[in-house]
Structures are given as C-alpha cells and as structure tokens.
Image (cartoon, rainbow, N blue to C red; front, side):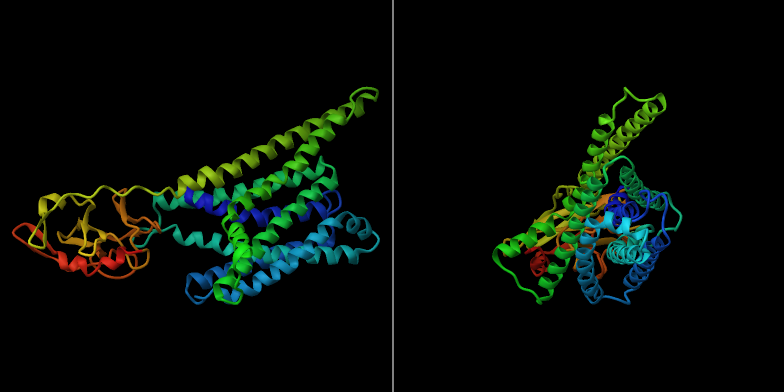
Length: 424
C-alpha cells in the first residue's frame, strides 16, 4: 500500500498542479466562470490521459521496448512548450482582461495551456499507470488482501494529488493575483528544469550529447534532485498562502458598516484556513517524499550466514539444518578471494532449491524472506519457490550439487567457477 502511495503521489502532483494553476489564471473569477475556450484545456487533459494509457499499455505488453523513440521527441516538445508557458503565466492577467473583448487571444492562451497539460500528463502518467500491473503477483489469486491494499494505496495517491492541487488552486480567491502568478511561474520553471534534465540525460545516455566537467556535474545534480524539485513545486505555494494571511489581517475591522465588517472577518477566516491547509499539504507531501519513500523502500538486512562443514574441497550441509521450509543463507570464500553467498530452501515437493544469493537480472543483491515468500532485495519481486533451482528471470542462479546419506554436497570448484557474479 505504502509503495503504491509514494509512487503515485509524486507522479501525479506535477500534472495536477499544472491543471489547477491554469484553471485559476485563465478563467474569469479564478476559475469560477470558465470560458468556452477553457474546454481546450480539458481537451489537452483528455488527450494526455489517452496517450499515457496507450503508451503504458504498449510498454506493458512489450510492443515498445525502446522508450527513447517516444520519450525523446516528447521531451523536446515539453521543453519548448514549457518555455512558452512561462511567458503565458507572466502575461495571464493581461490575456484575461483582453479576452473579454478579444476572445481569440484567450482561446490561443487556453490552447497553449491545453498543449502544456497534454504533454506533461503524457510524460508523467505512464509510470503511474504501470503501477496497476503490480497489484497481483504472478501465481497468486486476483482478489487477495494484498491486492486490495495495493489498490487502496494507488487510489489514495490519486486522491491526495487532486486534494493538494485543489487546496492550492483555492488560494487564488484570497491571495493577490500577482503573488499566485509568481508561484505558478516557479512551478512551471521547476517542471521545465525536470523536463530539460530528463532530455539532456537521455541525450547523454544515447551518446548524442557528451558533456564533461562542470556541465556534467550540474546535470547529475538536477537528475539526482528530482525528488526535491517535486517537493519545491508544492513549497512555492507557501508564497500565496502567506500573502493570503497578510491580506486578510490588513483588512480593517472598524470604521465600516456591520455588513462590510462581517465580510472582512469572513475573508480573514478563509485566508487563514487556506494558509493552514496549504501548510498541511506541504508537510504531507514533504513527509511522503522523505519518510514515506524511505520506509517504503527500506532495504531489509540479509540474515547472517549459517555454518556448514568444509572438508576435502567439498561443502556438506545436513538435511535437518534446512528442512524447515525457510530460507537459509551460507557464505563461501572462493579461491580467488571473492566472498560468495548461496541459499538453500526445501520446497513443497520435498526437493531442495539451491542457488547463488544472486540473479542474472539484479546481480548479487540477495534474497530475503517476507511473509513466507522469497523476495529479491533489489527489485522486490516475489520468487516462486517451486522455480528456485531453475535458471531465468529473477531466480537465484543455480549450480550443481548432489545429495546422499541425508546431506547436501557442493563442490567448491563449482562455486569457484561462479565467483565473477559477486565481483561487482
């Protein structure tokens, strides 16, 4: 549940905030009276969602196995449109005022906003949508308590992103417009940095762009700071939240008729409430991106290695030591000095699943036992115990062994030949 929540919330947050600020800045009355051209933004949202669903489906079915062919042109378009959108936010007040007499200006502004939404949604949502494929583990029934908890985490992540965007959008009612527009400008700037960083990283990986020295360090800094850039996207809305409180307490409560005093008090209460909700939203997102992520992807410690008998270049392990159906880990120092690990587990049919504590996909990350399941430490995939001892996928790399007289026998030469797996 927590894994789905911390994956969905940051993925949806940028698009949700973008939809919210455009709705606030490009509609009369802060979004309460949408114009006809505002449906262009809705069209952009729908197109982005449909495109993301199709792209995610093609990736899940392995029809597209090279995402670069889609991501590269998308990122080029994102950066270009983001730069245009930065200018749009700065002149949004003028566009809105002139749009009353010249609707075409407002229509072009909403068309640009719709294109910005479509590209951002298409860029961000496929990874979120692919979380749906993790609801059911291979070989397990569809409807289980684990599946329901994962679905609940996914749904809560979607609702949280929408709620945060709704809270920040409401600040347009109490904050000076120019302060809200400034927060929107910073939001667009942070999204531009994220898109540009992803673009340059993709070009660097493909060899189309090669940078060294300071430019490479700057690229690496922003690439590794993606989580903090997402957190900054919500923090910028503390500006209009603070401005709302200041505006509320600057309204005088004396020297006016009772009706106007009541209006001032109501405005102050609304501004204070929105500021508090905004602060809680920032704290909630911050906790999700720090404590939540750390807890969700906390790496479990591998169990300590158990003892065994080593004589005449042969490892001997008695059946009773590994007959309980749980994971048992052993350590061996190869002839070349490499410290290796291997695991043994007794399977339901009475056979023994034996292999290196490493796989071909994730390397020597190791496996651990959780709720009766064997889990790959790196990718968190549950391994079918019946397949341990067979090569392929995320299964432990198998090796030859024999059994006789109630013991498992492993030749050290067999392990020595596989030491390169742990030389990483």
